[in-house]
Image (cartoon, rainbow, N blue to C red; front, side, top):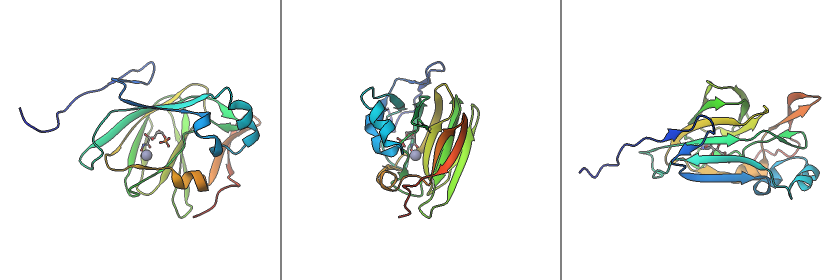
Length: 192
Ligand code: PAN
Ligand code: ZN
């Protein structure tokens, strides 16, 4: 038999958004990302309950450029204060590695920014394919009332850099005001 890496399939479960086999699963609860929400009083009120914010099901592959990492994210509906449930968001460790997101279920936003402070928001519904261009940090936000589920694929060596986002935050925050979704300036954002 050849020593080459063997092709394989993974099953996407349409009802749950999970993968089979599940692969490497990442579970993010409020306690894992407390500092990222603006309303710290609301965080304190919810942290004991510690709601599940999102899960990522990763096909396990070597982290080299030859491979294409792929995974599904299930981002649950909800808010902390008036800020929608969201992913942490990150730059790729190798900054110029791009990514493709394909929305499968629910609705949400893909918010992006560059280190220069450019900002971009894309709306995502089932069927939307979004291109995260090289050098753009990316975060998803669930603006609906059911799980927002998407598939992602990106170069195997991309890596994840959360540090910058944890300290500087995103340029804008996605909040609900008077029953309507709005983007507001993040008072904590500081350009690095
Ligand atoms: C996605 C994200 C996933 C979770 O697979 O990693 O949606 O978001 P955070 O990594 O920001 O917590 C991706 O963009 N991978 O590169
Ligand atoms: Zn990414």
